Image (cartoon, rainbow, N blue to C red; front, side, top):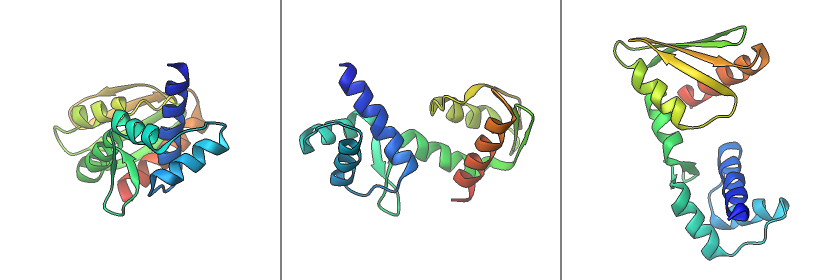
Length: 142
C-alpha cells in the first residue's frame, strides 16, 4: 500500500510539473524515480487519482482543472506580501475559490480564510508566498 501511495504521489507531481500526454510518458517518468509499473497499473492509478485530459490533450488532476476554471472565472487579482497571499475575487465567489484551493493540497499552503470577495492565504515565508503567487497567476492566465 505504501508503494501505491508513493507511486501515485509521484504521478501527481509528474502531471503537475510536466506536460504528459500518454500513459507511456507516465511510466517513463516513474521509471526514472525507480518504480517498475505496467500499463494496467498506470491505468488504475489514472482512474484512482481522477486524472483527465485538458483541451490540449495533457493529463491533469480533475481538482486542478476545477481550480483553473474557478481562477479564470472569478479571480481578479493576486498579490503576495511577507508570508501572505491576497486573492481578490468577484463578489460572492471567494468561499468557492478558497474551497478549490484547499482541495488541491499544496503542501506550501498552511491555510486559507475567505470573505465575500477576498481570500487570505497563509504560507510559511515570503519566498513561498512569491512562488504561490506566480503559480496561481500561471493557473489563471494559462
